[in-house]
Length: 457
Image 1 (cartoon, rainbow, N blue to C red):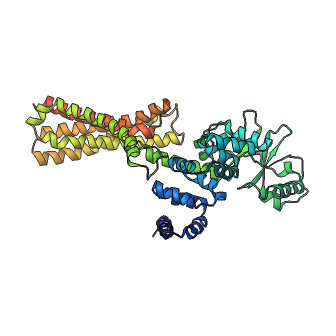
Image 2: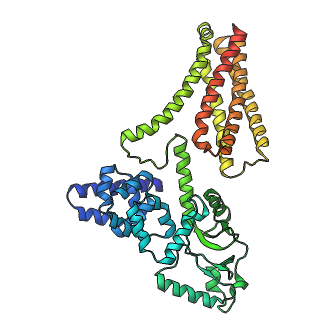
């Protein structure tokens, strides 16, 4: 059994025990077991429940933990939990959050809760929070934690240690994932990083400027989150400084923020491929889920009718040669698969910023070459199969030619569609698949039936 399967079994076991305790009227026992879990595990349990059970369990969560659970919950589940919370309890829960986490759910909070949270902040914290709110959530500025520790380059390591001791005494802990202290000039401009390992292992009378790392480039606050994640991956970072357009240090991003970005991107890719929203509640009411999915099904229905219309144009040909009806789904399917492969390659290249203005034509030509090679290979195979099956050599050649043409068409469409959608700032993962299927099905039917009509009748 894999670790993931063990986690799922454990979660199911916890949920079963909680249900039994609530059914037996042992709410205190259920609350005790629930609150032993990490906030992310509590969120997982809540997301695994239908809405009515979720509301009952939410009442058992320790109020001091509820803010962290809200951060871990997603989309519609989070909104339900907020709706189920009393305003004063909700305000107290979210006040304990780090500013970047608070910013993530700020827009979902009721107005009264927002006012209470802001009024409870001191002036410095309120100003820092407004800095975070200045930037969109999918940028480095929206991800950052503004509580970045910073020191001057001319102080000694002993003075830095003393500063960290005072900070911990005043705040009870150092910021999470503190692997380095940022170094800034008099105007707050970022100069470099002082690694904690150097801080605790080198001579304490050493000046910061003598040992600080000047090679780690800061991240501009308006950098897209996906680029931030890519940089953390490429450079194996635990934290990174964030600067404004004048180079002043305004915060830092830590690896836990980046993990959330990667997870969100993965969820969006999976759900977008089916035309769904990653925020959708797995146990949402059937009517709401049906409406969201109906829109996507309608789009697919239109593409199916287009393909059916193309087939209808050649009804008389199909009536005369029944083999056409048998073989035409193969042509469409092969083109669709080839196009899907190109679509996946190009979408990945766009996401990793490997597809750029200067190499798009080269990528397009490469994919066309792949389509021609695969088309020629499988055309030869199907010509032999169809000749043996139907004893009609001309039909075999028509089928092989149509297969080659639709494979080339499929890879061309699979390459150009995501490029065009990216230029229009439309997520290729969301719209690319349905457009590709519509094009390869209609073209495959048209070219096969059209060639058959011209050459066989």
